[in-house]
View (cartoon, rainbow, N blue to C red):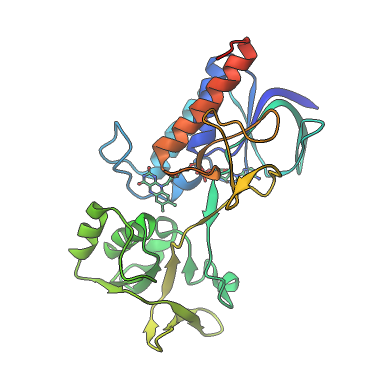
Length: 297
Ligand SMILES: Cc1cc2nc3c(=O)[nH]c(=O)nc-3n(C[C@H](O)[C@H](O)[C@H](O)COP(=O)(O)OP(=O)(O)OC[C@H]3O[C@@H](n4cnc5c(N)ncnc54)[C@H](O)[C@@H]3O)c2cc1C
């Protein structure tokens, strides 16, 4: 069985930031990721609020980070963590078992669904969770985005550039997105804002989605519906203290379980952004480095 001082689950920006700092301090680190490195970064078309970059594509930043991680000598495994034995300090994947002194959850979060019937069945076939990934398939067509926050408005701005018409369905009477994003949205003439609206069911034929029926009885015909209605933390493997499913941590990232830390979007906090996720990863790394070096604060 391979032994590591630190095992990080999740190679989003938080886990990768943590790994870089640990490895630079000479600490043996394993990073385990079950998908593409970068996590949610891969869903962002344009990032404009990450210091040092006026504009950067999410996947490009993910690849730069990944290559920095690999060049720093961090061990990287592409696999799903299935189980953690907290007593024996072991992480179990489909293929292997690894032991750790410190474990870091950097598992991020995933998109929430509306939980309407046939939703799972049409995911990837007319219902999408990522405009950057699937938007190009609907070039010149009519599509719909559901949600009222920054993610939803960012999805609309991306789609409005390639689709004929974009409907934005918002449950409330106002958008929660930042003012700068709202202003850009309102300036577009191919975006139709449907406030105080909710989808009551998906319309489909045997093969694909045809549109939606709104609760007020209106039918809107679109080729794809992009959901941006919030997220669920990937915290199922963590049995310790949580709030609303998010792992509760101290300022240094320590969780309620001994030797277990968490950072980034999987933690309960105020701001869920790239820079805060990266910061969280560095705070965790710093605490572990201090412990390994026997430094007390
Ligand atoms: C559409 C969209 C647009 C956004 N725009 C911006 C923006 O413009 N600016 C900004 O600052 N932020 C933006 N954000 C938010 C930002 O992307 C996140 O805050 C940040 O990426 C979170 O990073 P993370 O490392 O905590 O989690 P994630 O990026 O979610 O990474 C977690 C990783 O853990 C992996 N994982 C989970 N469970 C397991 C397991 N059991 N085994 C192995 N691996 C596992 C996942 O596959 C994933 O790769 C946006 C988010 C979205 C969705």
